Length: 183
Image (cartoon, rainbow, N blue to C red; front, side, top):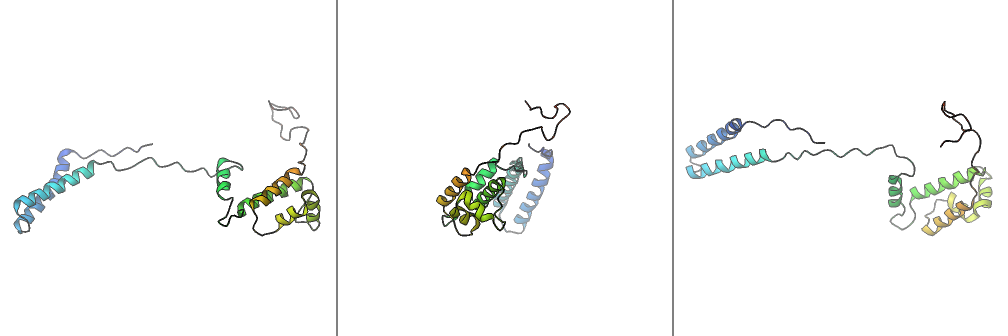
């Protein structure tokens, strides 16, 4: 979207606002003896030309970039890009942000099985599903390598997901009775 520019000054107005001060400067430089008449006139021409060109040039006003939407959904393209950049630290270990995501994923999958890692007996129950080394890594705070995270993800994938709930739709609408699938 481009902005509309204000109307330009007429040629006479531009001549008066640039030419008269330039002529006055020329006369002052000549009368004080700073410059001779030829050099003073050339200085006036150069200054008037520079001002005229400056006024004719584009202001550089461009359409502003649109604001980035802040309502991001999980799994959106921005999330994938940010996670890609946040995967590894400078030392080569997996970054905290990725580890947090993997830990959240593990906690969600374990919660589907009724296991809470924060509970007193949670680590033992999780170790039966994931393995003791994976649970130690999930609850620990040491730097983790890429290979370890792959092993964790493979172990999390082996935990069975909760079966899909069947039954009537939780929020029937007036045009679709409860229990009828959407098309």
